[in-house]
Length: 350
Image (cartoon, rainbow, N blue to C red; front, side, top):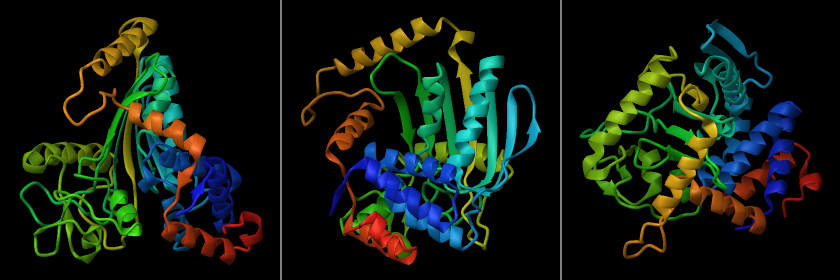
């Protein structure tokens, strides 16, 4: 399993995406977000996804250079049709618009539909936090194929339906939560499959409705479980709310479209802290709160307590220094694409 510098991975991803039809601006944005996921330790949303995006471009499920259309708008709200463009590009632009509206009006929200995979949801609320705002985002795959069973069920009815909230602070790394409402993000199963690694019990049921540690069971008729294990009704309820925010409110609907076209719907919001209290005081208190949490004596089996988002920040610093491990199966797919697009010599994926 090769270890590759993050900057080199960004270059490889960008060049392959451009060869597949993305323009340079799109390719740079997608690569930055994707490799940023690797740096944060979320390999499921990292370089492993680039061949999938290229395949979707070739199937015309993703449209490079797609129009960005505002179909409904007020001073504080925006409804955006991404026209099947790259989700990273559409959602980044949408969050920038939402931040600007919140800057002018204290609070703003947007819905986005007909865009491709948006990657790691945390990237967009963190943009708001860096602008001195509280950021929020939910995402749903619309009527794409489902993989998560409702609590008590054994057949898929929901997506992994992530939610993220990010807070401004004076901390070195962002204070945020980014979580799937399923027991695990679907991409982590793909990583486990690529690495031929077992998964914990409680993530999947096989096609017979039994617990399994085989990540490949999902593609063999299995189903993912909601977050919470024996208390999975909580993850199920949260997932249903995310589905309404990002599927029904956006107009994508629910259920499954037999065409199978992946379609991330998103709800995002930004809240200007200055509308509620002094921003500097708020950031200081969030920082003090984080320090209060991390000073908690650790329980048996733990080295220390981390504030929400701290582990991703520490991993990013370590991986930026030491490089990113790429599973052999993904490296081979990247190498094959480099050969296909005549980039083998330039990219040198040995």
